[in-house]
Length: 306
Image (cartoon, rainbow, N blue to C red; front, side):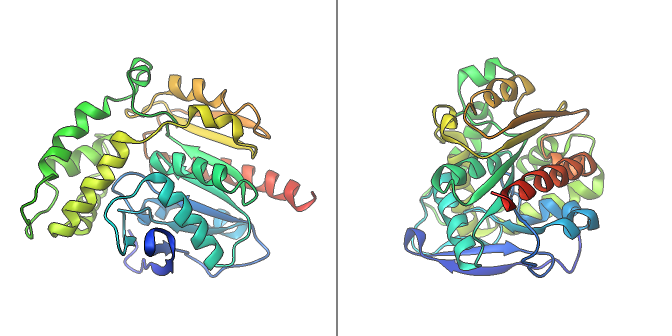
């Protein structure tokens, strides 16, 4: 990861005040379309470092990564309970603060269902959705039957261990949790440097009592979220969904079922990426970036002429 990586913050009014953390690798260029990037569970804006480094991508569009509530440097200033709908509203308010009227939105895993929520809440502001390795259901027996993970079984022990009234100033997520996140996201055989960096990122971000409370709420959001299947009919913008064959969290079978539910989307496409892991933009940036450039180029041009 680049040592010069920096984030900025902006305060928005939702939930009585949120200090939203974001990263824009290059100054905003109004002549280019803008792509918002939404990261996966207990990662941060650094997940998209390969995209920031791709000149073909940054020459084509502005990149703006906004870290979700409970992630990176984003903090709710007055409450400790929030949902993915709150992050979607926050993102829209960040757009307003930064003067962005219309954008494309890309999200990995939980980021994917945040981008859909953004499109549902502000259909006039989202030009297109790029979903990576996501699911738009709640965590249900049906998704498990399609080959998705059993989130309740895997995450509940961690949530239970993080739930306490006792102050825990020395808390850090344990190695088991951090390595499991790396395994399911980047693949068990990812480079050791990748593993080392992300274990440190997780431990640094979620250390102390505040970090424990924040990772607990992020995990509760993941496990207990509401599904979107019944709402996908209302999405009107184009949708492209990229899914790796080695994704151990959400399955291609589930993606095939859910992409069909975007009945009123301007266009839909499901792209299967051979060998791709759950954090697809990190493990297969070339394949992802090429599709992003093609999608934004096509629909950005069309929207410029309507």
